[in-house]
Image 1 (cartoon, rainbow, N blue to C red):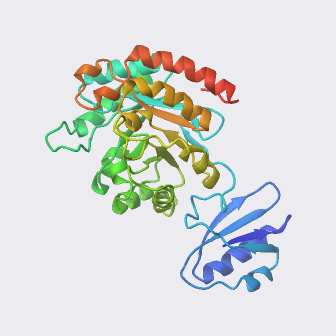
Image 2: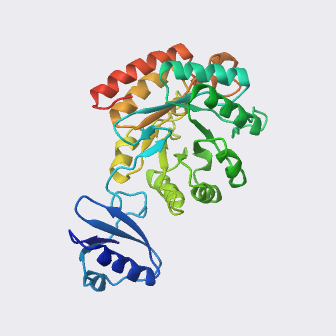
Image 3: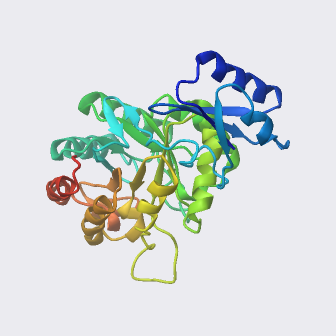
Length: 337
């Protein structure tokens, strides 16, 4: 439920309402509008007397919340959330491009990629130190050594780092190196991990599971938000369908729909969505046109030698060309890179 305070309600009246509902066992979410304050009640499992609340000093009315994702939804948080990382703003009129290899394979490979991403105008460096793979015999990443290489690349290029964390016990380690903690598609409903990154209070990039609904994605975000970590970025990365010409099917309709339902920023991963480098550019342009706040793109200096996902990785020259095209589309949409 949302409590709408009257325009000009005093600080004391607002504090009185908050104190009363907390006595009833509710947690609250405060949203400050231009002319009034809204107080969201998070379920305690107890019934709430709307008439009693509406009789309190300074209260204008109450509104029931229809969606189960109370913290992620716009009903309790109508304004867009903007997440700031080292001067970058994710969720406003700018488009943020995160790019780099699927996996950190060596110091030379990552530094070469990082410099190319920086030179082309990329804003953040992505790269996996820990890699969940379908086969146990595939390259699983360099672990902590990969994190150290990512930190060196950030020091040399100034690019903030986004990298995946796979288990709750590793959150504190990865958080020492990463600017954004990525939750991969396979872990979207790993609830112990969601609780752990929520408690870390560090920006989180939450990828949609390959067979997950939009509501399930938002409910996964709710777990993180419930710990007071409001710096969550949603990622559409394609869902599994019967189509065999692409790795997954990119659900571009999810972008405007998520923007309607939620205040959280939305980025798109066209690399994992298609599994084909030649489809990454057109789908990146379409994602920006659909309203995405950013992109996460795989770039590798030598895709034919990549230990992971070479087929969907752009060469640096293709990434540079894409960045020029993205700038034009962003401008057409009234936004900027």
